[in-house]
Length: 437
Ligand code: NAP
Image 1: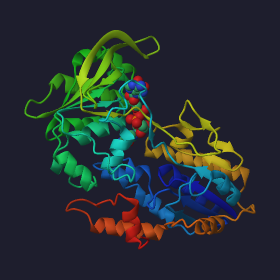
Image 2: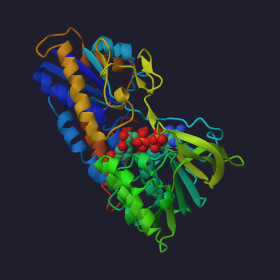
Image 3: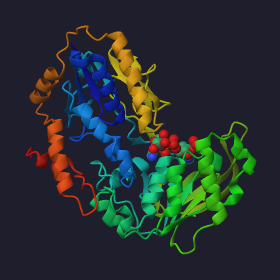
Image 4: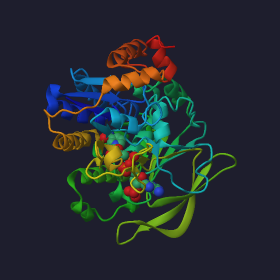
């Protein structure tokens, strides 16, 4: 028998559990540990609330969690309630699947001003993350800016521009919907430090901007290279560029009151305002031979009282686990950190790829584990029994998958009409459902 602990219950954690369960059959016990009382990580707290079809993948994770050899142990923070070293003492292998939930910083003056929020915070706010219910992003001004040209920037801009009933069928949390209803924002500028060819926005999500009820994309055709240059692009990416070119050719729809402006070749250099963000100073850029953004010295200002920085994420450190500073992830070799210690998903490779990318990633690490301790071999670790004893001794109230089912049922029962659920947002609300407080 082997005992495995997977830390983190997002896609990377669940795919690794699935792979280990397949490789070891009944010769392993797999505990999926999460700091929150509820599972699914990025699926619950990251994937946009108006993209419910993407969230449906959690049904597959349910099947994994319901497997005989798998247990969910929620409300346990590794590095706080229990250390990584303690887990290594209890399990044959510990696999860190904690994602990259912290915002990377721009490192420019004014970034600390009120009104500047990271996308992890902003997304967490509208997705019911327990750390951000009180974020209160300022929505009372007419201008907002989103910094970055990735998919998360697109999510943030879309959420800021939707009308109330465009959230029907979504599970955006009530406090965010209420605040967005009162939003005065009319112009959302998406700032990219490079050009249209360098965006990381898939065609499906980009295309959605063309079908918003009250908002219209505004793209400047002068930002594009000659159309022949698109031939060199990979087909999916070319499709995105074609959509952007169409937006530029059509021009903004004058019947719509809100605008999503794509401002390319614009590198933020400073955020200014009297005690709060009021504008971003950006420098016009050119691409150098390597494709990097090079400042031209020409600057201008973009008004914005809400500024969402969406420039990528970092994995938090855990005491005793080597860290790759530059990559913002755990130091690892193809997922292996050290004896019996592994990383998967964004904690392994940094914040890139889609949900599906985590499947081969998890399977590859599971193969490494199986090579180091072949199925059928025995270890001498205490496993989940030992962890539960330690948590009980420390008075940590853990949650099980059945507990999650109770929370899920209560969230579904609390849903507003047309919404799949009303997520509970605070620790005490989850624990109240379970009679723990
Ligand atoms: P991302 O795709 O890496 O985009 C980060 C953006 O920030 C890039 O445009 C980058 O520009 C820019 N940036 C970085 N540092 C900057 C700086 N100092 N100043 C200005 N701009 C800066 O990251 P993401 O949007 O956070 O997405 C993370 C991952 O999640 C991606 O793999 C994404 O595809 C995935 N995701 C998928 C979905 C979906 O499948 N629907 C939804 C959301 C996210 P440069 O290119 O110039 O570096």
